[in-house]
Amino acid sequence: MSQLLRQQLDAIIELTDTEFEYVLSHFKTRKFKKHQFVVQEGQPVENDFFILSGCLKSYSTDANGKEHIIQFGLQDWWITDYQAYYYHTTATVNIDCIEDSELLCLSNHNREKLCAEMHKIEHFFRKKTNKRNVALQQRILSLLSSSAKERYDTLLEQYPQLFQKVPKQLIASYLGVTRETLSRFNSSSK
Image (cartoon, rainbow, N blue to C red; front, side):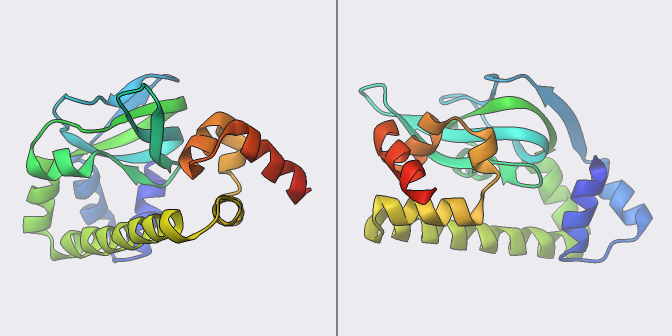
C-alpha cells in the first residue's frame, strides 16, 4: 500500500529507494473502522492523513445539529483539519470514516523535520498545498456562483467514484441541497 504514496511522490519529485524508505519511516500506519473519528472537533490534531484505502468526510455541525460537509477523502488523497494541524490548535471540524479506512499518518513534527532535511519533500508539500488551495477556491466559487445542478454535474464528472462510495444524504449535504433535490438530479441525469 505504501506504493500509493510512492506513486504520488514520484508524480512530483524523484526519490531514490533509500530516500523513499527514509520518508516512509516518518509515517505511521493506522486502521480505522466505519464511523470512527480520525479528527474530532475540540481535540488537538497531530497528523495529516494520506488515505491508503477507504473513504472519509470532513464536516462541521452547526448550532441546529445540521452537518455541513467540507470535503470527502478517497484513496490517494490527503485530509486533516489544516488549521489545527499547522497552528497547533484544536480541531474546528470532524473527520470520520464513511467506510473502513487505512491511513498513513504524518505528524507535523515529522513533516517539518523531513522538509528541513530534504528540499525535494518541501517542494512536494508546497505543490500539494498549492493544488489544495486551488481546489478550495474552486469549491468556494462554485458554491457562490453555480446552481445546485451545476455543482452536482461537476462533482459527478470529476469524482464519479464518490457516487459509488458515499451515501446520497452525504452528497446532498456536500452540495448544499436536500436529498429530494439530489434524487431529482439523479433522475434527470439518466
